[in-house]
Amino acid sequence: MSHVPQQAPDGGLRHLLSLDGLPASVLHDLLDRAQVLLPDAHAGTALRGRRAGRTMCTLFFETSTRTRSSFQLAATRLGMDVLNFDVGSSSTRKGESALDTLRTLEAMGVDVFVVRHADDGAVAQLAAGAAPGTHLINAGDGRASHPTQGLLDMLTLRQRKGRDFSRLTVLIAGDLKHSRVARSDLHALRALGCGEIRVCGPANLLPGEEVLRGCRVFGDFDQAIAGVDAAIMLRLQRERMDEGLVPSMEGYYRDFGLSPERLALAAPDALVMHPGPMNRGVEIDGAVADGPQSVVLAQVANGVAVRMAVMDALLAG
Ligand code: NCD
Image (cartoon, rainbow, N blue to C red; front, top):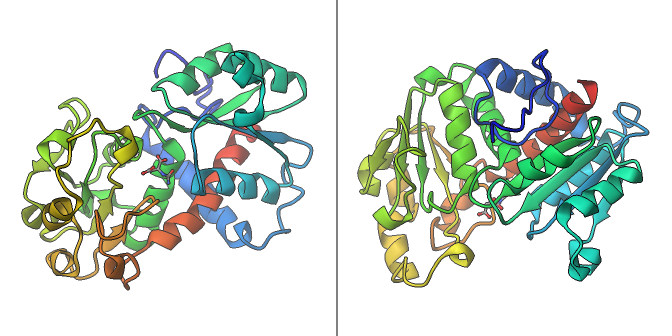
């Protein structure tokens, strides 16, 4: 969404709308900030003075479990006031536009809006109408972008595999077509100079060439996973699908599910990642999701620190 500058002329972040176009230095700075905050991110009280007096509002036009709760906790742990705007019971039901809703809450003194929306580009559009001092964070817009998920995935990789992404082969597998997580991961992996990026999924669940720029594309999962350092598994997004894209869940698991046998083809210390929510027995076997190579819950834990870091950076800038 390059028409809304998310960086100020001095390079500081004003909004976080997409990872697309952010250089490695900005990504590493955010990850460094998250890593510094991490020890206290879960302690509860240590950082409560850090952004006291500032207000964060979640504005979710789509459902969420992890993202919304972790933003709430992240803001609370920075000492911020937290407002959870309930779209379902609000005047948006009476036809008030998202921008009028945002301006109304802005007038109440909200500094940071965390917004999820079903439409691609919706958060950038809101950012274009926001007052100069207001910061927007994209918590997922349509299929386009989910930048904090991309960052927490990179933090999880960096913690376990080091800062040098050029040595890594990373696979993103499953329903890439409908996945904003995949797009943000691809933006980040490219910017960080990942050695080899592989993607794998049924042909009708892969996005266009522009999204897959620079990736090795596989139709065969056994070949795709051979020797990889990490496999990022994606949820089959049945709610976003037209009927008939996937003939059967059993068939999908057989061809594209991460089973223990398939995981054995990856590097011995390969990481298993998944943004959640998982469909056990569809894209991932339950035993793999809970197994020793799975970092799924570490991703969730890193999510709180990353969201603290992003809000902290926006408010510092
Ligand atoms: C994802 C989302 O909503 O984009 N979940 C998440 O934020 N961790 C992925 C999904 O819904 O499959």
